[in-house]
Image 1: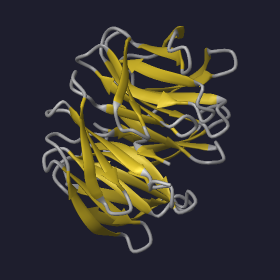
Image 2: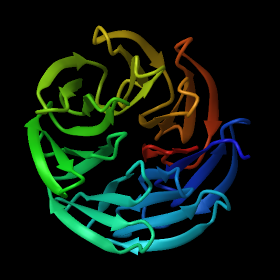
Image 3: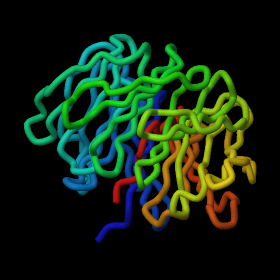
Length: 297
């Protein structure tokens, strides 16, 4: 069996770099036009979805052949993208239309479009595929969507300009990186009640959990660093230097290695969550963003 692949969107190159994570080398570059940004992986049917804000939709890649096998039009400017853990539905956030569109994986048909807050960006599905969380950047809110009824259940205020977010494996905590207030908001899932606000570095962009959800890694765009938060104490325990303007971040299935896309360096930094150090730097394409969960198991 092939080792897990990391799919890194290179927005300025109109391409996706495919990293074979065992060798930690780029093994293929796939052309995806429309200024690709977001990534979602479907581990059930081995597909990868790439949002294209200038293309008005998303591209579909085959996770085995590493070829582009389809393009779906959504309209507006698709940015955040996610898929449920059952591999049945794709969710696309439209930055300009303030909506989330839901597509069926098999038929590729639109199921429903929901109105959310202003400029929806990052999205994450709970492990049980019950809830979808959406960061509404301009509204400074997080929306919680019930995936049974396909209705917005709750919306709550967080920090200023939330962008990337994470949900723990138990589905009990949501973490969001707030770009303009330089902090992370911690929410509980029942009523989206705010549990804490944790200060991090300059312009935090996205988040990823590792080591059985004990650590939260946060990319700080302006500081060229990743902040590490102990999720038990909700304190920053380390700050790790990476490349210039780190943005997308995702954890390898081994739950130990964290991959960080560096926009200005056009590289990916690999962090060992146990040693809290960068163990490798991989050259990718120009303008690497990789916004979302980008490592296919």
